[in-house]
Image (cartoon, rainbow, N blue to C red; front, side, top):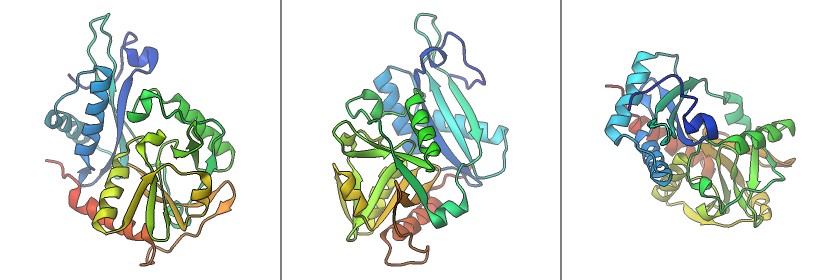
Length: 274
C-alpha cells in the first residue's frame, strides 16, 4: 500500500465517503501518540473489512511523509484510509493532508462556547465507534454551532443524554469528581479521552463514566473538551450559561491539574523522528 495524493473516482471514499481517518498533532519532536491513532484506525478497518498496514509500517509511512513535506510546527496531519473498490479490484489507499491548527492561545485562556444542537446523536449507529470519513453530519452540526456564536456544538443522544461535541469529547468536574459520557452514550472513543481518563486515575481523581442529563452538566464546577489537536480546552459558556475558568496556575482546579499532567505526558511520550 503506497501513499497517494489523489483518490480514484472508483474508490468508495470518493463515491460514498467510505473510509477512515486519524488527525495527528505534529510538533518539532514528531507525531504525537501514534500507537493510539493506529489502534483506533485498525479497529475501524476491521469493522469495515479494510486492509491496514501493521503499526510499524503505518508509522514509517507517516514519518516519511513528514520528513519529505516539511512545514512550520505545530500542524495537523490527517491520515486517511480509503475504502477502495472490490468491484474494480482497487485496494484501499493511504492519503495525507496537512493543515494549520485551528485553536488560538486566547481560547485556552478564556475558554470556548458550546451550543446545544437540536438534532440528536444516534447512539445506536455503528459509525459512532469509528473515525469515519463520512463526516457530513459533524460538519453541518459544527456550522450550526458557529452560526449560533459558539465554537463547538454539543450533541445529546436520542435518549436525551449528553454525548459529545461535533469534533471533541466532553468532560466536566463537580466536587472534585471527573465525569464524562460513557461510550454507550454514542460518543467517539477519542484518543485524548482515554489519555485523560488514564491521567485522572494516576492523579487519584475520582472518575465517573455514565449517562448524564444537561442539568448535570450545568451544575458542574468546570467543563472542558478534548481532541487530538486541542488537547484540553476549557469551556466558558453553554447556551449562554457561564462557567468559571481557572487560571493556569490554579492548583485547586481539577482541569488545570489534568492539563499540567497532560503537558508533561506529551513531553515524555512524543515520538521523535528517526
